[in-house]
Length: 231
Image 1: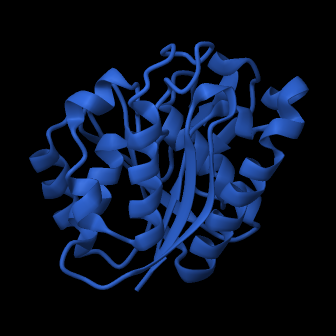
Image 2 (image 1 turned 60 degrees about the horizontal axis):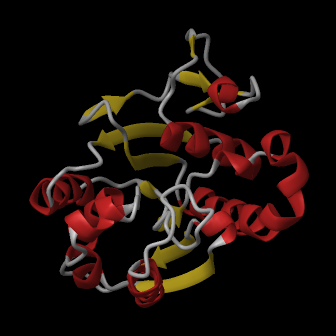
């Protein structure tokens, strides 16, 4: 099974504060997707984009949201860890650890990070490697951050069609559509999910999946998509 979620730190109630109402539905959808993934697999691989580039993070790792305004510590293994807390932990893994903790299940997560500007071929290659593993796949990343003038990347009229195509691909479980996303356009739109979604495309190509789009919205001018794919 595969779950697709965004990575806004505002998922945490401790960070949402005045935006709690605006993020409640998104938070519920993300927890629902993670809970379903936990019901299907106790071992997850989290795929996310990070400026540190391609690397693997082991399940004993821990990090904190302190850089985003709250010293909330999360681990990649819900059974606990004594590893030092990394105060600069990659955001996709922070979100993965927090979501795993919300499920109430025993979950162990390995992080597989890829550069935000990784080519579609690089993403597909990682996806093919992951397709051979018997794990739940958690794919983390945001859509375009350019949907309004107050968005982090200001307003770009291309954001609407871009995220409409992403939402449709996630709803329809369409790996080819995700694989066809233009990396240059995604970069211009500040869409951090492009590379992880193309890893997903590589991991699922040639197989039949059923997609469900649980949530799609653009609060604060950033697109957030939540979906689950089942074989």
